[in-house]
Length: 398
Image 1 (cartoon, one colour):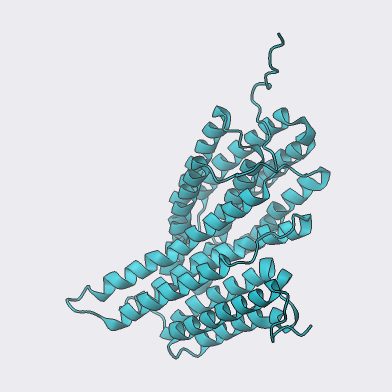
Image 2 (tube, helix red, strand yellow; image 1 turned 90 degrees about the vertical axis):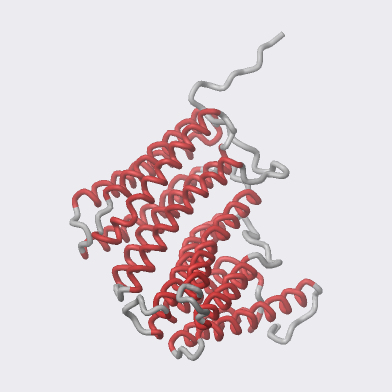
């Protein structure tokens, strides 16, 4: 009787891209928990910077920190979709990657305080070394995609060397650092295009969509933290402060509607064509970042209402209006423009502009944003209902 062929040592087997009932694993959910710690630290840093009126520094440090968290999450998530074979090797290296995410999170306050990113860099290096090891293991266990796996390992190593040199050589907070950071972002986004020019890994569409769904819930959880902050502050002086209760109620409504816009009847990632997949995947950076930033904006409004901030109510309103508007626009770019037809395709861009105007002319800005989002949800559902039934809605110019 022939013995079963044993896979080579230090190797990972690929998963089927058509596997039924593929869902996020407990290990992936724990990985998300490590990511949410880093996201919370990033939002807290941005919120405090905005409350002190340091908008430019807050935005730059937020984008830098959130990008590092997101790209590490993205790299791991797409790899796991193709190569999570539930082996001891995969699990151990995944846990070390999680530890790296926690180290990264520990360094984020220093990034906002002084611009130094040494601790954050250390966490990122830990994550990257393990991810490269995973790709090398995949190359050994999946000969059909060996070239792609080797290209991923090479690309990630090269870009990590770039980040390391950048952080160690450039002075913290230097203007030149912005240019080199932008170059690094481009290099990061080029790695998948470079690697998959020789083939595509067997990632699972429904699994990837679910993973992005889960992270979107996590980033919107930052809004919940701000809502709790508002309710707590409303009862902190021996009597109810109705202005803070209003912020808490309207922030809840806005958060629930952002959730409803994303988790609607429209299908995410309608095609796995490479260009569309990259727009959808990369576009989620803006969606995740602005979802989290909206929570930071709510916290800033609480700080203004309690007289702990050094900015105006108008500036505070914009810290909510701008990320909400970008969230809506991003959702249109990555999903809704694909199925919207005629004049209906202008609906979400028009809503995004209206939300910005609600922040610029702050007469009950949260209430106005709530009404605008409610109108969008109603119109979107009506358009989709008519499209599904094969009839035309009044927005459809066709």
